[in-house]
Image 1 (cartoon, rainbow, N blue to C red):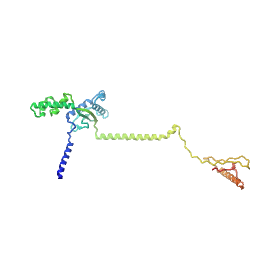
Image 2: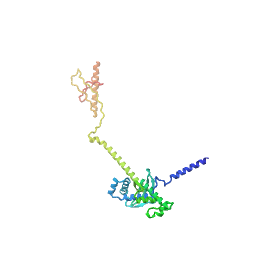
Image 3: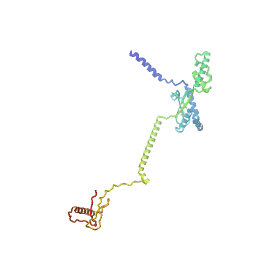
Length: 328
C-alpha cells in the first residue's frame, strides 16, 4: 500500500521538475529569427547616429531609443569600444528570457574593435500584428484546402516559395510577410540596455582599483580633519580672546590692628608683611616674629595686671610692633 501511494507522488514531482525546466515555455509565442533581426535593426539604426540626431532622440524618442543612444554613447566615451564590426549570433551568445511584464528579453552580442558589447532589448506582443496574422493564416489555410492540401505547411513550401519569405512553416511565412509588406512589427520594443563586456580579470582589477581609490580618499579626509583639529588651539589667539593662565591665590596674611597705647606717645608703625612670591631674609623674619610675640605678651600683661620683663621690641630696621589683634 505504501509503494502504491509513493509512486504517484514521485511521478507528479518529476512532471513538475521537467515542466519547470522547459526552456521553450515563454510569455508568448514568438519567432526567434525575426526577433533577432529586429534587434540587429535597432543596433544598426541607433549605433551610428550623429550628435544632433542623438540629442533629438534623447528628447523626443521612445524609451528604447533613449536607452540605446545613451548606452552606445557610454560604450564609446567610457569603455572605448571602438569601431563597430558586426554581430555574433551564435547559439551560446543569443539569449531569450521572460520579463516580469509579460515581455520577452532578446540579448545579442555586437562585435566592436576593442571590446564586445551586449545589447538586450525588451519586446512586448503587438496585438494588431496578431489580428492581421490570424486573418492571413485563415485565408492561406482555406486556399490550401481548396488546392487539396491537408498539411498547410506543405502548401506553403510548394506554392509560396517564390515570395522570398521563410517557408519553414505557415507561422514564420506570415510573420515575415506582414513585417516586410504591411510594415507591421510582430513585437514592440520598449526598453534597450547596452553593456560593454569585461572579462573576470578586468572586473577584479577595476574593483581593486576602485577600492584603492576609495580607501585613499578616506585616509586623506581623515588626515585633513586631524590637521583642522590641531589648528583649533590657535582660534582664541586669532580672535584676540586668549585666556591668561590663572595662578592659585596665595593665602591672605592675618590683618593686625594697630592700637595706640596710653603710655607711649611715639607714632605707631604697621607690621610689614612680606609679599607672596618674594624671598624673605631670615633676620627680617625673626625680627617680625619677635616683635609680634612681645606685643602680644605686653597686651596680655596689661589685661591681667601682671608685669612682664621688658623684651626686645625693635628690629635692625627700626620696626616696632605695638600690638597684635587676633582676627576671627
